Image (tube, rainbow, N blue to C red; front, side, top):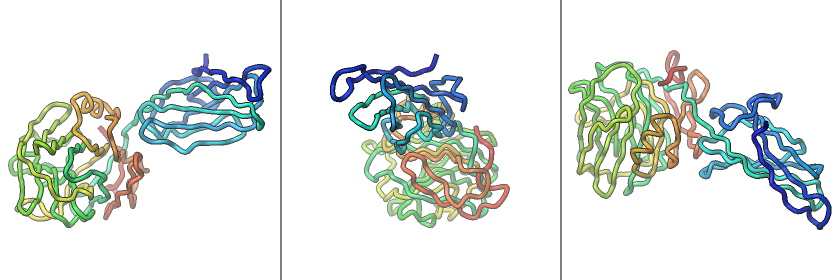
Length: 332
């Protein structure tokens, strides 16, 4: 049985049968396999079924409570829609016969999961990416990502939040691996360096990183692979954080500029401290519900000029990658 339930509304003008409309969603172009969940980027075959009305126009709406996809208005009652939203995607529809008779469908909820299967690979020599951060200074924030070191025998910048979108600037907040003491270092610049670290056992496997910054207490709390790694109090972030830098620091405290030899994917920025439940969701590939930027590295394999976050459509420019670096088919 198709997954879709219609409701009725009175035909305009009064009298006669009551038109109704239902939404059905399938995974195949033949409209034979009903689904209630699909992967982000997959094709949802949407079918509108009208009763007691012969529509001349159908309109479909897609939204997840945070972002809307473009609405579609067409004569036909079927649509192959590329799933471009994550989470609980609400599909709504209306149909009209061109006069005063309109049917509204009961919204259909499609669960969309993002499958991470690509990563951005940096050579540690001159590769990096730089774009806009939508995070605000003077407030809570969190940054999450998956990373995989290509080397543990050197400094490896992972991500930085820096002023002026400049990869040459001292990071207002940064995170990277220091091979000298096997620590993830967290540091920032505010007329002088703040430089703290948490010890890890480094390897060349994929790991998930979640970093919470609590502005009121000036505390950084770090989760590695969904487990608490540690926290650091009195960490002052008071310089602009309007730039996002991946794979490079224009200045690493006391050692100068560095590039990172690593793979990185599923980079998310949140304007708040994530709860334990949200961190668990992010670790398992689900939305936290608070993302304002999300780089899934879902560009085609190759050397892209830009990567795009699919929530706010922010672009980050990618520099100097040549094969086998750039976007690759590797992921956690």
